[in-house]
Image (tube, rainbow, N blue to C red):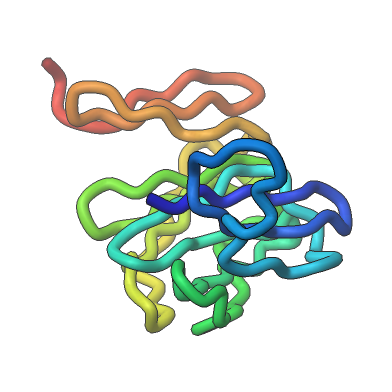
Length: 151
């Protein structure tokens, strides 16, 4: 029952209740002005919204109030830690691709917990992960990866 919209370069982040007609300003739950650059989509999970800035800073907000519960850098091992991708949540894990072709795995929780970093081929990527039949797909600049059990 809550929709989140994030702006791009120094745009706003706003949470609204869907529905209404005419002036729906009263549907706004919270708004954060002039946020850092956000290209990818955020994720909503169990009363929280997770938003990643392009510079690799993950924010966790209370979905109803917008209060920031944490703002932490998501760090892998590669040279390019920025992310121009959308993250995904599978189970209680957040998967964040970075430009070095790594996928950072975090706990989907209001407390920041880094689980691990998975490296692929060292090639750059700006692609988002896709999930299909229990597998994850990621395209780097040179390869298309399918991660999971062969079906």
